[in-house]
Length: 401
Image (cartoon, helix red, strand yellow):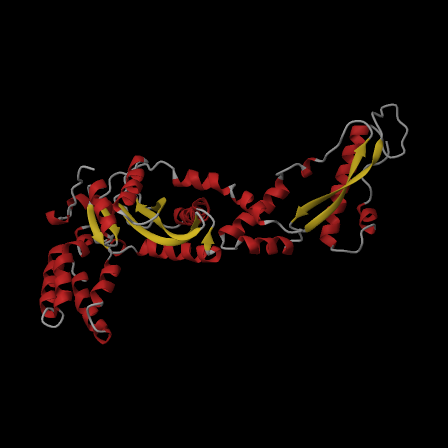
């Protein structure tokens, strides 16, 4: 049998002077195929052998897309039987790498139109939008597994919020609410525990979403933080036996709407005196005193403070080590900004499934980062939750659904 390991420089000399790395890759793969075929035939080129099983029958051209560009290979043909190299089989490592690049580009906010340009920049002949969509569907399994995973243990704190995205439905462009739920467990870790889509933030929509979280194992919830949307508030009351915290940031915006812009700084500083108190009792006393001071000049603001004291100061009845994380929906606000940044590149989603795919992948990615980061909350302080003095008015009793 003739030697199968031809001199690599001999093959490189036959290249057309193009990219060196691509030429090396083509040459190495060609050597592998030649060696494979000689093993199948039982003889080298032009070699006489009693062990010969068949003969060569020319070559067929085959392109292989890689990150080095498109490799132009010549696959040996046989007179009897067939030969096909393993590295050209569908979805092998090289192709998976390419798919991964396309998926990560789409998750990273690159539109399907621009993915085609990306593919061409990688040395490929271009990829159609339909192909990109098929490739991106491979993400669905991972995303669905993440969004539907069981929730084990206790989750004392839950943050809820929604952001609106545009999607095509029946030839129209409509807005849908994308609900995101984040929770902290007794290990001090925060996780993204749910994503839901609905036509609005109506009570029934929120209830279905929250019941789904409970069915997956969400338990031990003591405090739910959200904005004051009526449908959400009603759903929380019906599903959870927990205290409700109205987002302090959203409330402050509503409060300052009753004050002229020039007085915003002074009024906000006066109200924040209540937030600086060491416990719920002193915070309430300061809150009511500030409301009385503001009442003569801004009666509507004072009335708002009277109505919302228990909702805005609810977090003060929980361990002080946790309070900076409990008074607002800021953890989700930052997450929503990242979601909107990625979604703005797409603009209008073709369907709701594509929203789940992209937003779910973004949440999956963010959740992984959280798990490798330091603990979000002090673990020891969780034991103090049931021992903190809680105002009975703050407790939300679950109603019969």
